[in-house]
Amino acid sequence: MPDAPAPKVKGPASYFPSIEKTYGQPIEHWLSVLRAAGGLKHMELVNLLKTEHKLGHGHANALVAHHLASSRS
Image (cartoon, rainbow, N blue to C red):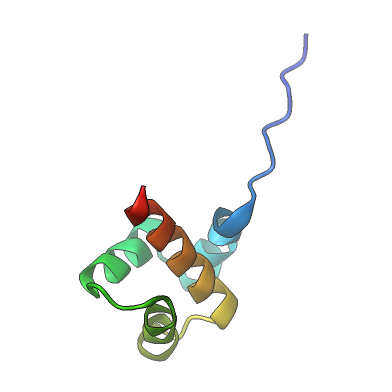
């Protein structure tokens, strides 16, 4: 019996392969940047990634959404 196809990644994590390829850093690097930033709000974290690390808005937003969802659970 053939293996079932892997489930399609949804939500913010669907951006992760593109983020790693585009910026040359593993996702854990970006999550550590967000953890080090402390208790900033969502858009403050997005703006940090955009201005200090030159990430695009969609990639920064996906990382922040994942980071905040993970820190709540």
